[in-house]
Structures are given as structure tokens and as C-alpha cells.
Amino acid sequence: MENIEKQSVEFLQHLVKIPSLSGYEQAVAQAVETKLKDLKFDDVWVDDLGSVIGIRKGTQPGAHIVFDAHMDVVQMGLRDAWQHEPFGGELSDGKVWGRGSTDTKGSLAGMIMALGSLDRDDIHGTVSLVASVGEEVFEGVGLKNALTQLKPDGVVVGEPTQCRLGTGQKGRAKFWLRTTGKPAHSSTPEQGENAVYKAANLIGRIKQLPPRSSETMGNGVVELIDMISEPYPSTSMVPYACLLHYDRRLVENEKPEEILAAYKKNLQDIKGWEVDFELIEFQAYTGSKVSQPDFHPAWYLSAETEWVRLAQQALVESGLDPTPFVAPYCTNGSTSAGEMGIPSLIFGPSTIHLAHVVDEFIEVEEYLRGMRGFANLAKKLGNFRQIG
Picture 1: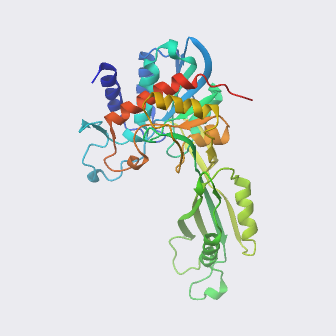
Picture 2 (picture 1 turned 90 degrees about the horizontal axis):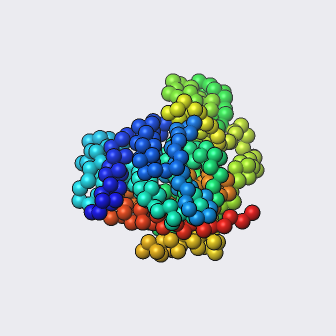
Picture 3 (picture 1 turned 135 degrees about the vertical axis):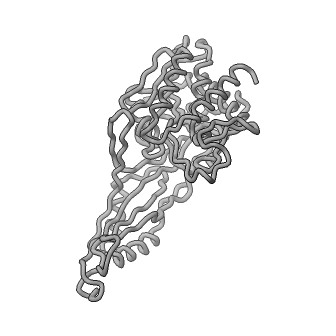
């Protein structure tokens, strides 16, 4: 293994060894900040939410391209289910093992090492690295804060795509419905109104409503994920309220106000209920807090655009498949492309099927393929000319 490859694998191992649940990314942020400074990025800082930002300027004129990967990881789950140490960063069988190795410290470490090793003469414009916070609980919260500061021409979001080119993604939203009834003793239920029965009626009606679909993304999804009555637990009491939570997977052009209006119209004959999107809150390790409705739009970019064409050229030069695809899962791209309208791509090593699993790992060969892709994307996308 050549020196730069050896250093890159060791850096990935170092990041995997540091636990970094959402809101507790400080130790990983410090490791990233140190590495960016060691690699002589022109400017490195930590923003108010705790994301680490590094900037490298090229010698050639060109666009400003941001490369983003999140630092946070999900819980390990049951420790006894793991054969490898969850935060061991073990290198064996040609793989780096541990929570976050695929999602997304493989992308993060690969981006940092790829951008840091570029010759400045190969950089057209500016490349920036954002190691973002909070993605696992609040897609886009860290990236949005950084993009507001950086104002780039384009964004590459690091997620496990098997080094394929993601040019769009489904969105995600979480909404709730709450039914209200009238309490009574359960021995005389006729004196009350059972809110759970009303909720069951709503569930059946929502099941009959077809989700939105599109040619590029297929069918949307609407799935009930939990239900709880009030009071809970109850003793001999007819429930006076019932709360439902739904996960909705979005296709392009779905708007939050239109979704709510459609439910109110289609279910208007049922009385005594309300609907809205869940309010999601994130407290960063810096102490800063952010909240907004849990709605993350879908987005899609045509292969006919200059942005996608340049990205495809970069992958061809990296020996990678340039065929674009639409990701069925949600990423920080919902913010960069879906909310802010910035041309974006999803690209990274490994597969989404290894994300969040027991004994998560990333293959070293795949990790290094991703690094080549990141490097060539940085070189090629600097030639992008933003219009409008």
C-alpha cells in the first residue's frame, strides 16, 4: 500500500475509533480540524453548530464546490451482537470495521484526504470541505448552516452509493395526526367517545389514499410508524385522545402545505382530529439549538445538465460507472438541492445496505476507489458555470 493510501486508511481508522452520536461530535470534529490544518487547507474553522469547514483555493479560476459528509453515527445497538469492536476501527480481511465506517466516515475521510492531496494547479476555483453535524437525526441541519456561510456553486454529498453517481433522491417527512374524543369509564363507554376508534377510521382512510408518484422516482410511501392513546397506560378509562405518527417518503415537487391540505380535504367528513408535521429539534455540542418541521424535499437533476455531464466525465476518468441513479433514501442533499436550489450530487464508497447494521464495515479497495472519485470530481466540477 503506497504511503498516501496507507495514511488515508489510518485516518479512517482513527475517525471510526471515536464515538460520535448526533449532538456529541466534538471529538471527531477536533480530529478533522487537526487533519485539515495538517494538510495545509487555506482556512479552517468550526462554525456555531460544530461543523468543521476547510477551504482550499486553486491556482486556476473556476467554481466553488463544497464536499460534505456528516460526522455523526447511529447507536451501536446490542453490543453482544457485534463480533468486531463497534468503535475499534479494526483493519482485517481488507476491511475497516466499526460503526460509521460506511455511514459516512468512509466518505468523510476519503474527501479530506483526496482534497488535501490535490495539486493546487489542478483546482479550478475553490474546493471546500464540510464535516457536518446532526444528519442522522436532522438531515441538512449542519450543512445548511455551513452553506449559508460558503454560498457555493455546487455540492457533493458523501453517502454510500457504491461509487455511483446520485443525481437525485426521494425526500422524507414525518407527520402526526391527533384524534380527540371524550373520556368515560370503560364500563359505560357509551357515555364517552373513544379516540382510538376514530384513529382507526383515519388509518383505514389514509391507507386508501394513493401516494404521489413520478417517472423518475416511482411511488412515494406513506407508512404508520407508531400509535399511542391518551391516557397511557390507562385504568378503566375510554381514551380521550390518540396520537399517530407517519413516515412519508416524498417524490419531487411535493410541498408541505399541499400535503396537509390534501389530508384535510379528503378526510373532512371525520370530525375531531388535526394534522401537522413533526417539529424536530437539534441541540449541537456547541450549545446552539435549531428547530424546524421534519420535512426534507425530494430533488432531481437531469443528465442533460452541464453539472451532471462534468460529474460523469470525472467518474469515467476515475474508472467508475458514470450511469446516474436516484437514491431511494434521504440525505443532506434535501437541503442543498431540495431547499436551497444548489446543484448537488450524491457520491461515496460502500453501500447503503451496510449502513446502521451490526458489524458495519467498509472495504479498503472500495474506500480508495471513492477517494479517486472525490479527487476527480473536485478537478472536473471546478469548470462548472452556474447560470442564473
